[in-house]
Length: 134
Image (cartoon, rainbow, N blue to C red; front, side):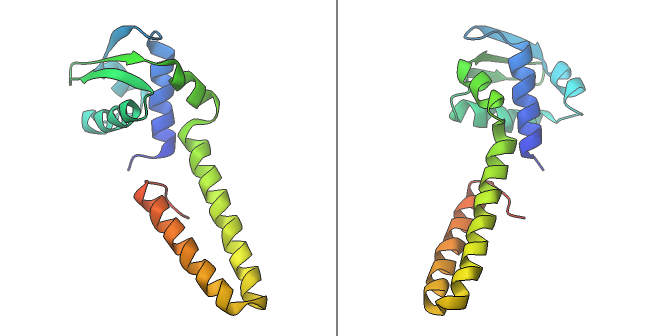
């Protein structure tokens, strides 16, 4: 399973090894040795997501080497906690909402049920976005 920590490790590796706004390549074996034996398929999926998020561009991933252009947004994102903090914030918000529902249920059971339905939709959206709820 690809975790936020793995994505952060890949992004940090890229930030440490690629030049900003310039095309560069690194051998896949370099990624693989530094990132605990990540498979090419997993790495390609992660890099494709980074490209969709505009953290990198001009991705050309091959089992021999990975070519890409690193954008400054990557440094900003990783310096703000990256994917790990994003998941922690989501989890914290979810837990807070859960406590609010429990409190609301004591005084207003009908409103609590409606709010619970909204919260369930929120959880469904989070799962669809790839954020695991604990």
